[in-house]
Image (tube, rainbow, N blue to C red; front, top):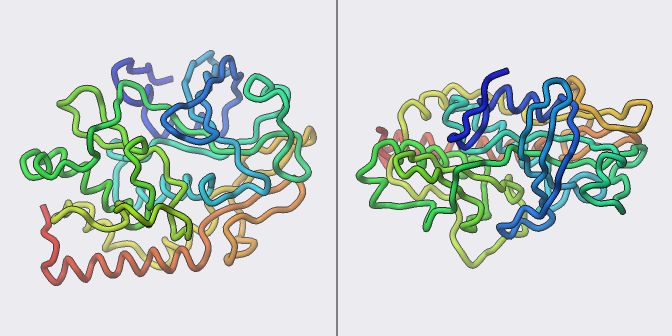
Length: 303
């Protein structure tokens, strides 16, 4: 196992951390409110059974049926997936997040009155994400002066803005963004991405990062986005799939054929598949096309 870095926002790199969150067995040893205005979210302390690796995580139980306007595992996982189109893991603004089913016995430390939220199961389904350490909420996620003067901050914030634009992120509350306490580190993280991909309910009275707030974007990110195909976007139609075992506990399984491209969460007793809808994928493709047209017209500089 990679040795944890006690000074970093994440204890181990994103890819192995995501694998642990998705697949490895753990015990929950503590649970508390997540704070920061995240309704219903909990901060869990996990201890993984194979090697006693200890990890703090953010957990949010899904609503009955697996999806909601402001509590949507599929949108959270969608945001994590879309950043892979144009970023390396070391530069991801969205921390690792996975869908899990937690058995009721283990879940009692979180909520002793909990009941299954997916038909045909004996567990609680939700999204579990890496808890960022050594970070603070910035005074403002976007600092135009620093963007003009600090090339590393410009790189990271422009990539965050690109992602938010592509996924139509419409929840720019300050508590949704975090930066390292070390002021020499210019990373910007987006930790709540449920209101994305064209949801109809959001705060209409403030601006969000679904519009490009910057005057330039990294050339290397745009070069990678130019290679995105219709086929690669259609893969977002299935982002996750879980099947209940004999005890009724949901586990991630290999992704299968899209059961219904027109809806985001597809349910059967003891089974859930989720992803972006045809309409959500088409809207993201249109946003990408418009972005590249603006760049080709010289409306956005590349750096």
